Image (spheres, rainbow, N blue to C red):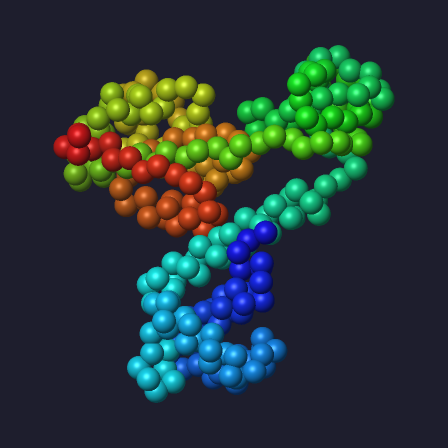
Length: 264
């Protein structure tokens, strides 16, 4: 459960901050009170707390503005709720009686199987050390798609890590200014590699790695992370803010690395 949903107090503080951000500097406390089904006195106390904590400023004349710290708290809370909503929709409400999986071995209808997420895909097999199990609904050969019902247990899945590699635009040297050895070190291993910009593609070519994704690398990194796949995204510096905004809105953890030679 996310923090803002754990108590009426945190939920009210969040909603009041949203109202202030939307209508600053003028805030009609009575309208907020009616909306949240609280008394104007309660709204006034909440706002006083927010001011004391540095999340809101006031000029003393019933005019309020959200501070940089308030925006950060609001964004962090919103990201937590977005993740929670996604988990509810994808992991709870969207649960269907039959799961689509890939058969690791030949399987027989009605057979009990183990379920394991690997490489972003769900596999049905006969492993003893897996927590999640189910029953296949039809015969299947190894490598075929097969439905699994009566799921029991939890399917283990770690969120993938994301490394953002920043490099200069062509006007500042492009791939010629990239520390190729550092790039090679970051793209080795089993990771998805994406390129944003011609300069990024050229840098990866020099590093001996063809990118897995060129178009839509930002969205691909997010989806890959939710399926347990780590990724390295190489981008020209001006593209980094949009990627960071996307990752932070999803609440995903990332590492930002500067590939420019002069930075080493």
